[in-house]
Image 1 (spheres, helix red, strand yellow):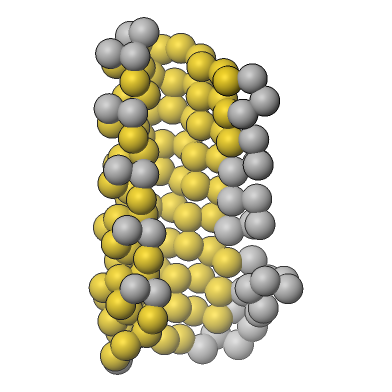
Image 2: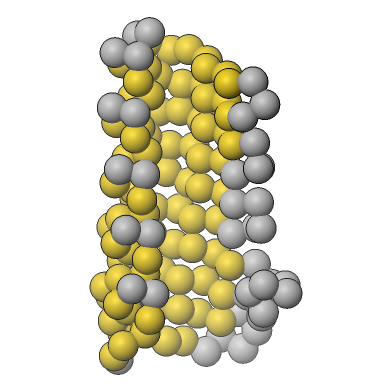
Length: 126
């Protein structure tokens, strides 16, 4: 397949967008059976470049991906609720789906901030 198209796997996932050499390539929308959804760029069958991932639990990530992982600058919004407490937002660097590098975690209940360096999802220094 080459050009614009739709791929649907019964009871599993759905993709609508650009293809190149039978792989997702260019801009598209990918929906998973669990309600997760990605809209953005693909490269040679991988989520790569800028896009938005919406998760079934309410998290929303907007930023950069490399080979299906959050990599580079991005913003993750964590909703208020049982899993994420007061709700928060992380703005900064990611590596292999983890907060890694310079960033800031902002807690939405009172505005407190952790700003500095994160390593594998852990705040390590101001």
